[in-house]
Length: 306
Image: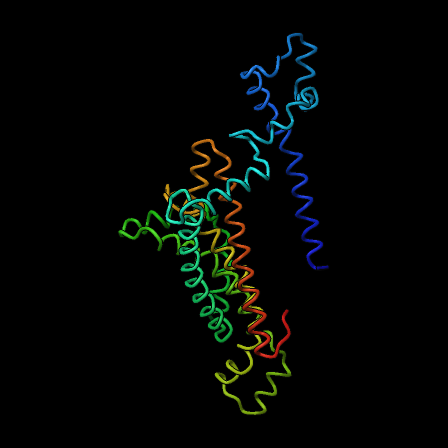
């Protein structure tokens, strides 16, 4: 419970700031709507207009404040509106419907998992080569670092267009972009883990005349497991971001990115915010799964969870 208290405190603070920000963000829209509905008489004199400008509008029309939390198309949706949109599109829609966030979530998640598998495999192989081959360490590692300086928003359309020229569309281009973002954390973490055994442990293996492969399987690989799981948790989140970004420039019809585009194009922030929070919850769930796997694996190996 004590470990949850700081998290709950931060969440509560964010919710309070969010709730308070709804009023100034939505007051002008609310006032315009109230005027059209005949619920408010707009100021006539210059002095009255001055009192209605800026934040003064919020205080001069305190009776309109509750209405700022119920606009159909608000600039900033209130928490209960986002929660209601998520409940409707997750629990009350058929999972095969294009209005269901479960359907869109699976589309994004499938690309995320495929991309993460590709990126993880590539990252582990590169890390093993970097640790055991100095030439790869001097050549591949700088290029891996430099690759992450390219903005993904600029790279994603290029990858999708190039792969489209060869007739490759759909899941695979999104998976490639997810792999691009997820492989780097795995490379760095795995290299750090494989190099974590100290000199005394390595000398002990040489004393036993252990071969290089025995040193890898008996010492280096087990020592790298905590680092690897830490990289997995970063990599899976990055892979999800990559899958969503890949959906944005293609006009995708399904996926969290597609739902965000629909919300922006049709002026419905609730759709955008619901997809955004659904993506955040998906990322948190994936990280939680890897955390549970980490604890189970380290317990089976006789190692305390980091």
